[in-house]
Image (cartoon, rainbow, N blue to C red; front, top):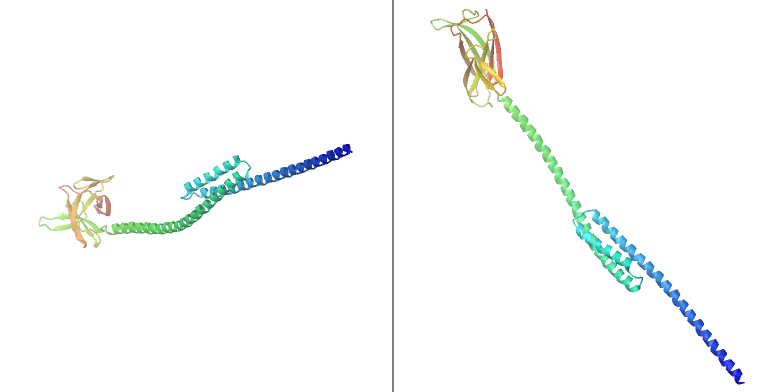
Length: 293
């Protein structure tokens, strides 16, 4: 009877131990499953935070590429994001670490929104400045074209005034003269009878010309290509002029007649064609020719 009781107690103990073992195994399995599930959630959370940080960095990269006046501040904020990404890479997969990094990300995200709002304001201001600059450049271009046109017009006007202010020498005529003892002068066309040559011309009226003394150079060339008279030489720039004599006229913007004489100096004039040229400095302003037989 005692043996039966002992066996019954032993069986009961074995059953209890078996139930405890089964419970422990079930609890351990549940704990293992919960741990794996938690680990999976933490890994996903870490990946999600990393993606958010990468998106934040990309936003800063785009803004920095636009090269605004806030570039230095944007670069500094991006470096904070890069550092947090490095910290996340090294962080353990636990709730406390990920929660801390998530909080830091939210702070950086809030800062990014504030900075980007300032960037947008600057971009709008810059766009307005660009429009103003373009308007100023357009106005400047138009003014420059207008000024260039005025310069050309003024240059043309100056040339016109310069051209118009030049005196016109007209009615150039030359006569061979026989001087009688009485003083009377007789025109002749015979070289043997000529004592002197009379050169006359007129200066036309010109209201815009500068008044004052005007000097003209008279050149007379005989049939043998000799320059008669003083045979003096004057240089005007690169040109050299040999002339017979000069005549100075007091010009007062009204027409004036000029006559000068060239003596034969005791020698007979040569037969043939003579050429008479009037120069205003180095510029030929009138010419004629005549014949002596």
